[in-house]
Length: 447
Figure (cartoon, rainbow, N blue to C red):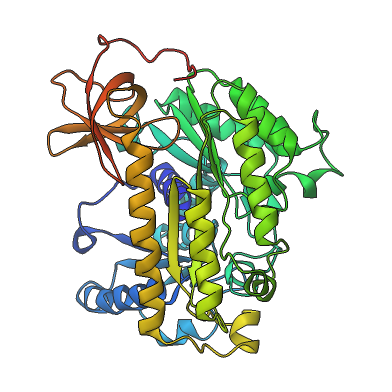
C-alpha cells in the first residue's frame, strides 16, 4: 500500500512542477512514507527521521514531510513534538497536506497564490493517475489500492488504528487509474486491500454491482481494460473468500492463479485470541476448495509466531499445519506488541525473543524445504514469465503463480510475456532460458 501511495504522491508532485532528485541531500522536498505494522519497521522510521535533522539544519528551506502509518488517520499526535523539524504530517494515502503546504510556500503574492492553488487542484485531480514520468514505459507491474483501512480489528493488528476504518474506492475511480497505468506501459496490476475480498460491501447503497460479490464485478471490469495481461489481488481473509470469487479466478484469463490468504496460526486457541474468526480445520477446507476450483493454483500465507500465550504445543500445531498443506510461500513474522491493539492491552508478551526467533527459523527451514520441492517440479518445464526488469545482467519476472524467474537474453524483453524453460530451481527463485522469439506482449493465456 505504501508503494502505491508513494507512486500517487509522485504523480501529484510532478503536476506541481517537481521532479525526482537523486538523493535526499539534493532535494527541495523530502517525504518519508512510513510503516509501523511491526516494531522493527517503526524503529527504522524513527532512525531515518533522526537522520533528517542535520539536513534540515543545513538547509532550512527544505520541506520535510512524513506520510503513512506513523502519522495515522487521526494525525501525528505527540510524535510531532518529538520531531519539530518535520514541516508536514500526512495521513496514509492523503498527500493533500503536503500539496497545500507547497502552494503556500511558493505563493509570494496574490497572483502567484491563485496560480499555485489552481496547480494544487490540478495535482489533486490527477492524484493517483498513472506513473511518474521517469517510470512511464518502464514500469511493468503496479499496485492499485481498492480498499483503504480495515474494520476487522484482529487483536494484534495496528492497521485499523492507523489507516482508519474500511473504505472502498468507487469502481470508476479505480478503473480510471488502471486505464491510465495501462496507457503508460503497465501490463499487470494488483488490487490492494487489507481484506480485499470485502471490496465494495460498503458501497452497496451507492453503486450497483452485477455480481453477488462486488470484487468479482470489479475483476470483470478490470479484465476489460486494454493493454493489461495480468491481474492479481491481495490480501484475502478466510472468512470472506467466496466460491464465486474463486470461480472468477479460474474463469478470467487475465486473473492469475495465485491466492494470498493468511492463516496466522495453526492452533484454534491462538486463532481465537487473535480474533481471526475461523479454526485450523476451516482453513484446511478453504485450501482444499481453492485447489479444487483453480487448477495449478499457488497459495501464499502469513504466520505470526510467539503470539502471547502461545505454548510449544500450540506452535507445533502451526508447524504441522504448514507441513501438511505444503503452501507455495509463507511470510513469517515474530509477534511484537503494537500500541492501542487489544493484544497489547490485554495479553502479556510472554514468549521470550529468543524463542520467537527459534520458532521463526523452524518455520523458515520447513518452508524452504517445501518450496524447493514444489519448484523442483518445474525443472525442464516451460513457464510464462512477465518480464519486469533486469538485474546483474539477467532479466527477471514472475510466472502467473508468482514464481520469481531469472534468464539471460541480449534482446530487450521488458514488459514482454516470455516462454522460459526452467533449468535450475531453488526455494525462492528459478533460472531458465527463453524459448520464444521476440514479440509484442501477447494476450494472456493459461501457461
